[in-house]
Length: 245
Image (cartoon, rainbow, N blue to C red; front, side, top):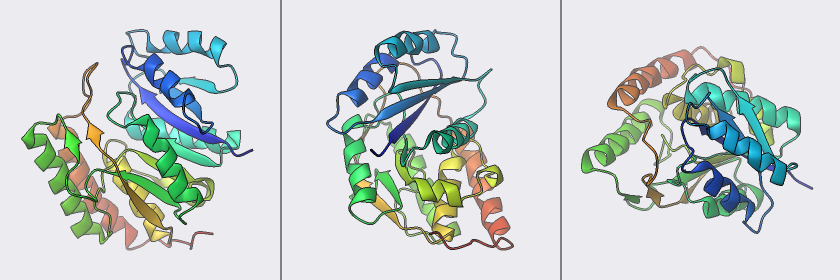
């Protein structure tokens, strides 16, 4: 039986984490969940530990010592997933900005449509974002345009954080060589998979801004990522990307 593992980083998500976990486990397809908590002072990890008693085979928890960044959380989760034997590994936010029901569609894109990486895309069919202020929509959309220009990728939503990786993609990528640790991490993972020759499929989704808890996004994060993407592109000129299997 294939293992579908959803990685969800958390920091102060007590309002959302139980609802999210129960929603994922209610889906028709069997998913497992790995929560990676960065020592949330609001007790997020304690909620997960209680739920582990109810879902001992499906719910996993990794606790880290502090707020170490989105990219490092996912990289730790990817390595854990590969050691665990996961076949499909997903990235998803805890705040319901990503609809858990779309996990099924991302999985289908990889299992049945020939995708190696499936991307939950806000921009493949217009701009499908709800409850974001106009300034943030423009910042996100313009960032994707910039990344496409710098990298040459034909991906509309280059900064998307809702994704499914087939196992062999993460086995091929040198995870220790991923440099960007903030939101630029999302770009670097797509770019690296693309450079290895893997097929990226965009699945249209509707992104809804969080209703509970506080956002971790800031303009500074995007500014840092933009310079990082340029450096990433320059580094790629001297790298040898073996074809993905």
